Picture 1 (tube, rainbow, N blue to C red):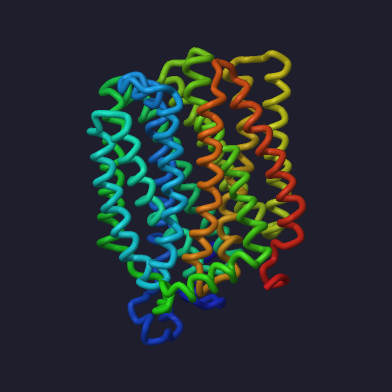
Picture 2: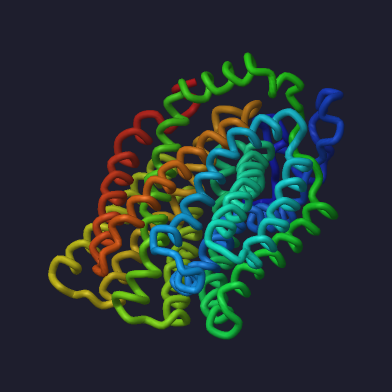
Length: 431
């Protein structure tokens, strides 16, 4: 789909209008039908938004639930880092399943499991059970987000897909804007369990839309996708491709900076800088608005400069934000606004890097988009798990773990954007 309402025929590299029938597909793909542009963007936005819903909505409740369950800070952090590790690892299983059976059945299974795990999390009587349910929730979330990324490759070429992804991530930005203040309000009014229970309502609503309206998008299922030899060959094909590594490292570094902020900010802003849970919700809202703006900037830059130049410009935003945050902290300006203003620059860059990076990573693999998406997601979440463990052991009642972590990832992100993506970012040159 582009701005004029055209879409890519599944499995092809050519444009066709939605008013014409899809290109002929093999018999195995008889269930694949074109998707209306508006429906595709709405569904993709909801599927991708399940990740910030799962993390951002409960972050204002994290200090409260840690105290209520009598657990140490490191255990509270594990409710986030274990979820994300399960999220990343599960995609290695969901990806081949989606390539074998299609996106729709994997999506429906993932959303059902997610809804059940959400209820279990809200009712958990101990930190150990909460961590277990959140782990199951993360595994189910892996099916949802992985399928969303693969659907983009089913329907669009890489450049058009980056524009479509930026539209979907604009929707994600809107959802993220609502999550943080809603989580803060629910925690203040009804307690931390209500914030976790809200995830169930989101999952059920998304499940109903997918079940009733979203058709299968995979044009050609791979009957050998689950065979060990085929899996090894496919993983090898993806992992040997320099374009995959360039964009996957880009998305990993971008998410590393964001996750450092998410993992540390509730403790820093509430317990160190003295904000209330509701005020902290508005802090997250403001960062989501910066991200939301970045997705609009992304589309404008893509139209003018193309994929690689857009990523390079976003790298300048990223390193400027991280470095300015470190500078104001080193100068002793330890106030919420002083940390937030430069971080908005980082989030503007994040709104550009993620749609470009996620579509770029799967772009060279139209017949293995599930596996490529899974490996890309696994890399991001493996980094997030490591960051969560680091944050949990380094939170020391100061702002420095947050500041130093964001600065580190902003530098890494800019270097990747300016070197690897510029050299290997065109899949047609490095096939």
